[in-house]
Amino acid sequence: MKRCPAARTSRRLTVLRLPKYPSCRTKAPNSIDFVEPSGFFVALDRTRDLLRGRETRNFSDCDVMTQSDRMIKIFDTTLRDGEQSPGASMNMAEKLEIAQALAELGVDIIEAGFPIASPGDFESVRQIAQSVRGVTICGLARCADKDIDRAWEALKSAPQARIHIFLATSAIHREFKLRMTTDEIVERAVAGVKRGASYCDDIEFSPEDACRTEHDFLCRVVEAAIDAGATTINIPDTVGYATPSEVFERITMLRNRVPNIDKAIISTHCHDDLGLAVANSLAAVHAGAGQIECTINGIGERAGNAALEEVVMALRTRQDFYHCTTRIETKRLVPTSRLLTKTTGLVVQRNKAIVGRNAFAHESGIHQDGMLKERTTYEIMVPEDVGVSKTDLVLGKHSGRAALADRARALGYTLSGEQLQQAFEQFKLLANKKKELYDGDIIALVQQEISGGSNREWTLVDYEVTSARNKTPHVRLTLKRGDTEKTETVEQGDGPIDAAFWAVERITGIEVVCKDFQVRSATLGRDAIGEVTVEIEHKGRSYRGIGASTDSVESTILAMLNAVNRIIAEKAYAETA
Ligand SMILES: [Zn+2]
Image (cartoon, rainbow, N blue to C red; front, side, top):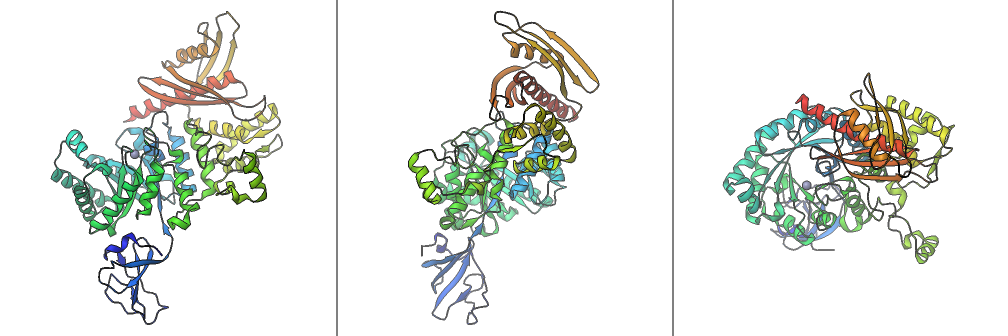
């Protein structure tokens, strides 16, 4: 039995009738659920804690009798907060693929983008709203009419849509960024929420920088936003400054002081600048928050957001402590993490919790000995529960299309009929080159199919490279775009890679600066696929490209083309605006 933090006030107790207690009499409507013959009252509070105490008017002295699990909503913002972080930009096909994977993972809400930010953002939110089902699709908007209208325009075809409206409330933001008084902020918040609510009944309001906002003013804004129609109140730690105890106190404070707080779900949005995003999110849940905003692999602005896989597995593994559950299909965690890594090129560190390569590797002798005798001596989670596959070696020359589709799905990719056909043709070619195809090969191959695309894009036709010590490298490159085929011969550069860059620039007419270049082996063995990731800069923005082939020069050219095609795609969106 523990003291219930929610027990100090009576207003969040809701009526619960339990027919199995025929002697129950309702003491006070909306407060006590029933009173036991012995004089103890029993009530279910908003966090679904079952309270039991002496009959009293204000419930100041009651205990939590039993606890039933609360369902915590998982609000994924990989495609919004995550995508706006440097080097994580995705094209339309990739965003759709990620959105589909998130729906399959079982997230409750997908924040698909910030529709007014750019025509590309608008279009991706619109397409996701149109095609992804079984999940609420959310669009972000500043607290301004044109933002909210634009968000709704993008969202309106979704069966379940949410508009997420934010407005800064902390003194530093009020004075320096907005130059508005507290009264003006409240007025603006109410007007924005009302406008949103005129479009749809699912409205989330975020007082930006809430964790640095004065208590009295935060309560005032939150109460006004709920009165205006907000159904979720998000308390973001925008700058990643809060500590877990502070977050706990702030959420508890809101639950105790805001009279209409019961009409909304409290949400948390934490940044990882001090490495506390997951801890802060869990503290918020512990204090009664019902929604966590998070991203796959914790990607996001600066140091990133709370990692979805970590908060979900913490709630699940420590269900005994949090008494909470989520709708997440945990077996999809690792496949979804891999999909995002491959899509963005942002690799997670080896020792990353849940999805890092070493997360379940037991190296020390003492640990291994313990593991062999009894798994639970050192293992708090079962790897299979998060989708770590036991076998790696899978397909060969004689594997069929169904086997490929099956393996791709297990690795996090759902392929359309046409994508599967193309991937299968590539698979056959590769299977002729190397006997055994590992998961890494399949991922590299499928990923190329997904990120590749339309006839607006440049594709590789042929290349020839010669290089030798103390000789200028020579590259002859042929590319194709639609019906146009162009060939360039280049004899310059510091090496064959540099020469290839020159050739791509000349043919496509797009000037780039190479910021990062990485080669990784996708699998084991000398015949492994070499995967090249490049980050290039064009007109002050950075773009990333991935290419995979058993020939590393070819991988490099493919990676460059992948990045150049992103630049072209972005220009095309800008022109249609
Ligand atoms: Zn954020």
